[in-house]
Image (cartoon, rainbow, N blue to C red; front, top):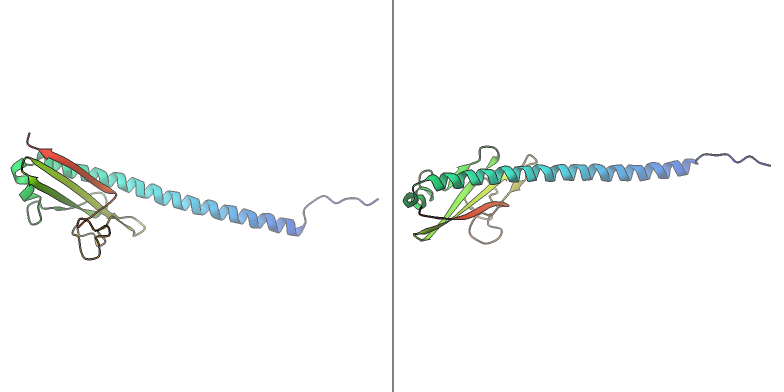
Length: 152
């Protein structure tokens, strides 16, 4: 009687190693993808916070001067730099009703991988040629806040 030898053949070991390599590669890609998404999510939270800070500054401003002071060319103007991110914000004001202002604050930024989040591709706060991807004649971003403001 022949003794059966226990163990794995070289081919079986190579197949297992190849399968492990595929699984580990997939797990590494998943880890990188989720860390990029976590960074984008954290930056979006910071960007929304910066937009909220700007809205608070506008709310504290004299109501009659908001449309002029926060317009293009006004002081402080309709463009602001972000404190915590590499980016810019833009303010749009609809003052067609003098008793109710519609304020829109849009924030665009560059993440640490160089990707621009928002339509402002050159981060200057202005809508330039080729930046209006959705055709609404205003900058757009995932970090956009819209509110209405009336006299107190």
